[in-house]
Image (cartoon, rainbow, N blue to C red; front, side):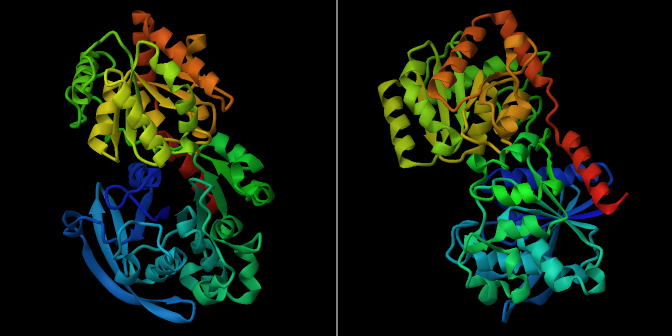
Length: 473
């Protein structure tokens, strides 16, 4: 079985969010299970020179973009046993940032055509093309409407994964002729609610649609979560699967993580105490082993529940706790938490930005990890926190509900709350702080958290089963 994983970003080449982690880890896990999986992504200008040195030029072709043809270079590199292909076009990809450009629709329409056009030029004809989010949603559309009549493409199946249904690739209908180049009889595939919706096209044409957790697969049938696509999801429910993401347990391994001040295991937690003390020192907080640290590594946006945190933050820090926050986002939250740090330097530490090294240190040095998301398709941070023995406090939504269960029954691995309500969240934090004061019980909870299996190996097995079903094997 051969799978081509098409993505707009992948660790360690180009990263802006969780998709990069998934695209960097799932293909690796599939190959360990003897599934031939290769990855294709754009050759962005931001890819480091060090990584570019490992790339080999394969060939150059031209790719149709509606009525015109554009240059496309194809490069190849091998990383951690996985072969990556890179689509080169400096006009589209020699820019700052991965997304947010005025012509993103054209950029990723080109990329989607290029993925299909490159197949006859590489030594890999996939059985399945696995597409991800709106940036690659046109691959199933183009395959079904423009390529099926060519022998090499006849038997290729497609999977389309929705990582976040909020971002759908919505544009004006003028794109159908001028950018997509779709014949008029197929325009209905991408038209929805008086505009072009690229995600809708992927849902319509893919052989199977997946989301990144079982709970999220159920939630997106509801208008509250679906951002307007709930009717399409319900119509295509017969091909919808929810498969929870995993984490790369080699990248996130407290026993070997080079970012940490001290390594540790569930059987020997002395290193975790050292990381806590060093994190307090780094953040300018009092070095107190008896006070719990609540960590957050997040985008500072309402969607992540920061409005709840802000509403009851005074109540949270009135307790004997310390709070360490890493992230960036909306001005309202950046300025609010900065003012809280200024007012309570012995309790609050804030670092703005995306700093992977510090993120690892927070995962290891904090005692609790707060994720009160309004919605969370899967979430990786709570699984990373569990791996490091840092107890998650989460709202029961999406992948948070699928991976964290409340420890009130002495069986769970965290603290949860249901309603999107600040006081419910505050009560969950209070229960965690109360639990921390019971030393033996907390140590048991930490070890239970570290024993959770959120590896990609487990999730890869579910993907393989789905691939076999699609291929009739």
